[in-house]
Length: 307
Image 1 (cartoon, rainbow, N blue to C red):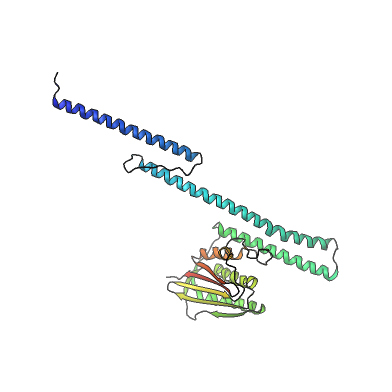
Image 2: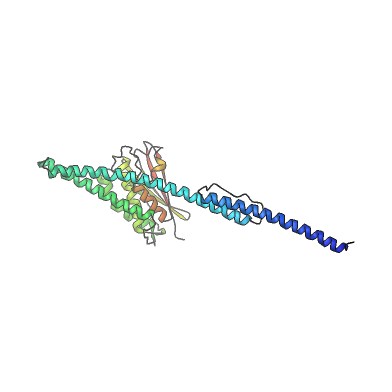
């Protein structure tokens, strides 16, 4: 029996279409099976798995989405591990920085309570105990302040004002303190006005922390403050002529609880500069430290001007 050529052509076309669909279905089934395997691996904790895909694959967008999810999960896992490690280091540092002065304080008080010291020696013990208690109180206050800043719970109140005038007022309070510590000073602030949107308390705390850092750590004899406008920014330079910072310590000075003094017997608590950096970031500013061992340190701050 002879088939109509048209029917024969249609039959061949139908067969080819069926074969194409079967081939395509098998390929899609293989892709789905591979996706399932990768998802099982990712679910099992292997976040390094990725799906290879071609532009023609029907599952391309799904594969790319799974790869993106795996990359994001891997990044989050790395950040979580870093956070856990940082938390352990923080707890270790806190254990030392709280327990050591607390044990010393208890020792002095027990000696007083048990009458092991009398007269002038007893008065001296009371004085030392009071100093240690005050230092411990300041440490706890600074720690809570840093925690609030780090968790973004600190509220800021920005107002537009004359940045130069605010800086002069802050430095006016510091002049008698610098003189009482035997430090000479140079203050260079333009007589013009410079309007900046700033939180007054935060900026005051920034300068106070940096100046306190000079008093406690620099061992210098002079401090210099220079403020100037540079395009759409205001730049603050605070420098001293002290001992400087060792190169191996410089990258870590803004880390929480980091102290350049390896013996950890310095008067600082390792939180002042960390708090300063967080406050500067909250004010949309930046801070850099430049130092030459034996010649001094400069802190360079920039803040955006009000447009």
